[in-house]
Image 1 (cartoon, rainbow, N blue to C red):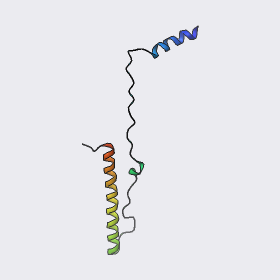
Image 2: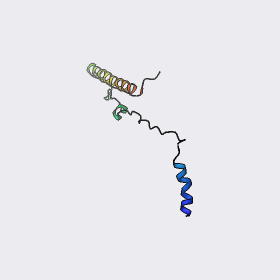
Image 3: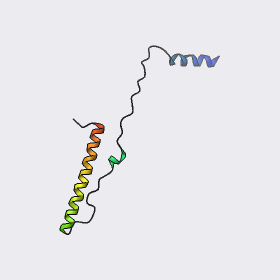
Length: 82
């Protein structure tokens, strides 16, 4: 009998037509983890010859293009800032 007295208020609180329906929103879109990894540029020693300088410049260009592509992908995923 004591259990019935304790459970009645609990059961009464569970139902009712005055409650608003629960709306479940979809989970947020997550970016791929590889978008948060760094892009490598020139990782060698300081260029000593003209050939090394050109190789370093090419590596830096490739690294910047990689980084810009990742920034663009993140902007498309999460929306560009206004």
